[in-house]
Image 1 (tube, one colour):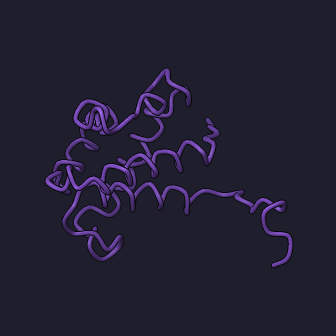
Image 2 (image 1 turned 180 degrees about the vertical axis):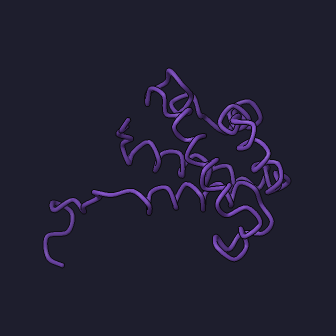
Image 3 (image 1 turned 135 degrees about the horizontal axis):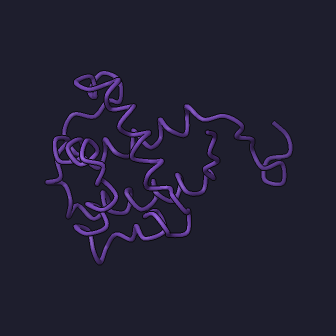
Length: 126
């Protein structure tokens, strides 16, 4: 079964996680914290519950703006983490902060996708 996820869902997720990183309040969230929540399938629930009021992940939770995004995202992250477990530092250049790893993994999801094209109204001559 094929599913279409808009790039905006992933880029908004990156912006939300980046906002959390920028506050410095969540530096104590470790790689083990994030990977454990990915294994459990509760990463977005964890973020939504533990980063209020700074974070806002309701659009990404199942039934939110992006439908079943949470199920899709968890499955993708689990597959990716399974493939690269233990190689986070080498593959994604992240060793310490869990939110930084989550940013890198979400970026990797975008890179593994297909079909992105620049907006011709923004850049007309390349």
